[in-house]
Length: 316
Image (cartoon, rainbow, N blue to C red):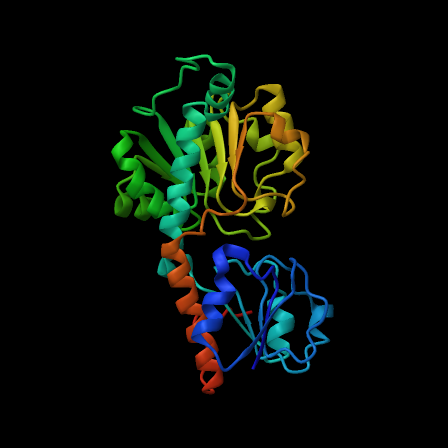
């Protein structure tokens, strides 16, 4: 089968090379960038960060499977794919080690913001020792918007810091409160309450039409001026212009971003001159998650080859 990888050959730690060694009888092609020029003659598409539109799928004369190397399928027109009898599948966060990896990077960003990593770098360059003074985590309130795989992995890691943990969940928040042992859990309509209580807010919810632009001028204004926002989900959940306003105006104290409004973001974007700790969409990129994601992708390609239904297919 012809398999198209919509990314540079060496993206995500050589993911494509690892898959290629496990499936030596198939032909793999990398696009060289995060773009798809054509789908003619392609049996399996690994879209990575590229959108897959209805118009694009009109070129698909042989495509049988759109297999994401991760969980995010928000860029895929699933309805159009289903109409053409194309399977659309992902590798769920909770089963691949991805949730644990993303949560660990979230902890890194949290500590970096509280201890002023940017200020430490400036002090070291200037030869100033003992500066800046950081903030301790004990006794702070951490708000989790989303209590799925990543949210739960964060909860396990946060407990050792002596923080109060609260959350937002779409369905049955009181059951989640009891099951996860949290101090408070509200529904989506109670987001302002969570934002007002939290010293740090983690976004770890799926991107949907309802969550796009969730953090905007109105919602950011509910946060404490001393609070930090960390986005581990998708860039579109945070309105870029509203975030720049909140940071420059002192509405919030800082932000940690692993995902962006466009990817890759412009390195000269003035928002990065503000108190932003940024990482290049690597939260899920570790040796642990790589093993799990490769296993999921390889399994589905083998299932397709054998005439079996792939696992973790999306439904429209």
